[in-house]
Amino acid sequence: MAHDVAALAVELTDMAATDHQSAGRANSDDPAEQLAWRRLTAQHGDRLGEIMDEYGWPTEELVGEEAARAAWLIAQHADRQIEIQRRALKLMQQAVSAGSASPRELAFLRDRTLVNEGRKQIYGTQIADVKDGAPVPWPCEEPERVDELRAEVGIEPFDEYIAKFAMA
Image 1 (tube, helix red, strand yellow):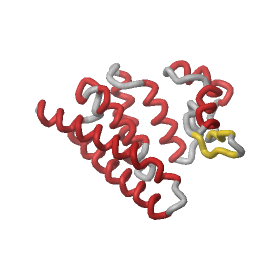
Image 2 (cartoon, rainbow, N blue to C red; image 1 turned 90 degrees about the vertical axis):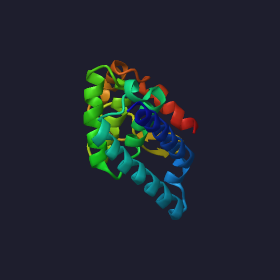
Image 3 (cartoon, rainbow, N blue to C red; image 1 turned 135 degrees about the vertical axis):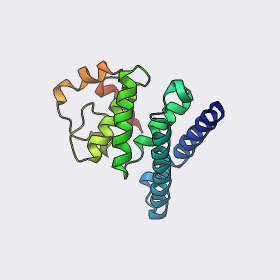
Image 4 (cartoon, rainbow, N blue to C red; image 1 turned 30 degrees about the horizontal axis):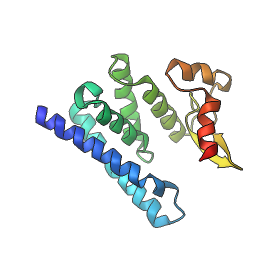
């Protein structure tokens, strides 16, 4: 079992590294690059589904900090596999309740899943577009409480967060 878990940790971190190297393709002007990104994230989403079947949520205790973060990234980018995102969200919620996963990462995944379901986000983590150099977030359920809700899960204030996108 220990060898399996070690191999799983390596597999997750390798998947995240590949994801990171390919992320620029997501918004490429080249349809072939966009398709390559979609295929990659779909393969990773499928594999994460298998991992969740076998191990539940890959927590830091199970696979280490880097691989646990990698699992979250894979779930975050499984945008065309809403069922994978919903399962990851449910398992990750249980892990956060048990103190085994990051409330901050859970907040990002919750927002991403809500946006993919066509609903309003809670924490204001998902940016819809950048217009004239200014980030345009997806609508939030309670925009007046966003900074309070973000603070509860360890996310910087909204204005600081979107400033990163404006510079990009």
